[in-house]
Length: 255
Image (cartoon, rainbow, N blue to C red):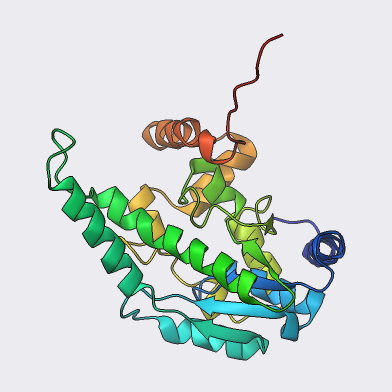
């Protein structure tokens, strides 16, 4: 647990103000709003640091989103500006074009998108949407990354999708610490303790990864995990997904 969540919250507020002072004093913050704890806490921090009028909350359903009312309630609660962009037409168009191309048989054994491709395409389209909106703003926009340390540790994010952004507020906070910050900000439990889900696979995050965030947070902090199979799975996910956290490797000419 955070020893002093109020101090941590204030430090994040200071970080936001310093970032924008250096990287766009007049820019607005652009953030995707899912209605879950991470985007809600980030949006609340941005609203306090910059003022609600400089925060653009973007809701991006892919067709019908059953919990879109949560996202709408968040932007109304925080008083930030909002935009809704339904990405279904873009998703259907792009996936259809790719499937059509792959069905022609140019790549042996590949006839269409894989399930992982289908799941990861919406987050990448959403990130493109956030940057497009940021560039459309009169004073420009800076896109907030909303991933937390727990998710980053096991690579539970989409590379160049929700893993992208111009600045990150939660990448050094574990899930339970994010909830603490939410409590300090006065965010209702229905948002901070909402069952996390990617909204893509039809499963909760914990069901999908095969262990709870409480177990993951404890392991990251202490190295302790009673279940050997879970320990090995966490280690494997961390090892295989480190590429999502590292800068792109680049060839350096030799003298």
